[in-house]
Amino acid sequence: MIEPIEATHTSADGARRIVELAAATHTTMSDELLLDTLRRNAKVSTRHIREDFVEVATATTVLGYVCRQRSEYIALRGDDPAWAQEVGRYGTEALAVEALRMRRA
Image 1 (cartoon, rainbow, N blue to C red):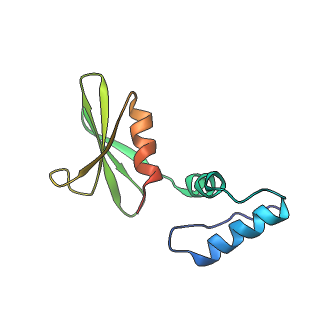
Image 2: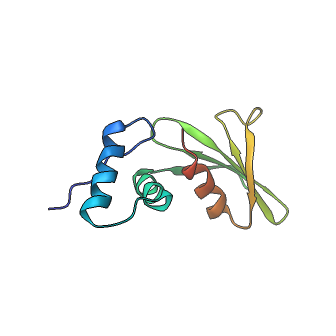
Image 3: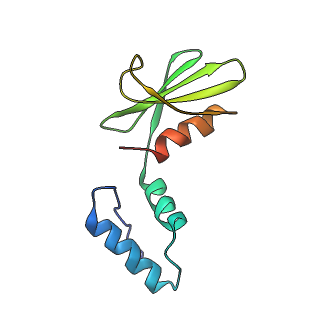
C-alpha cells in the first residue's frame, strides 16, 4: 500500500517521512526529491481577472498573479497586486503559474 506524504514547509513530520522514503527506496536525498514532493501536494487554481491578468491561489490563500506584457508572462508574488513582488518573467503562462506554485508560502 502506498501512503501519501503530507509535506509542507512547516511539517517536520512530512520532512522526516521524505527522508525515510529516500532511505527505503535507496534514493539519495536531494533538492529535487523534496521539491517534487512539495510540488505534487501543491494544488493551485487560476482565475482570469482580465484577459492579461490571472490570479493564482490555493484553497486557502492567494499566492500571486500572472500578468502578460507583450510576449512575456510576469509572475507576481503576493496577495495584493499593488504590492506584489516580481518572481520572474517567463515565456508561457503555465511556467509563471508553476513559479508561483513552487514558491508557495
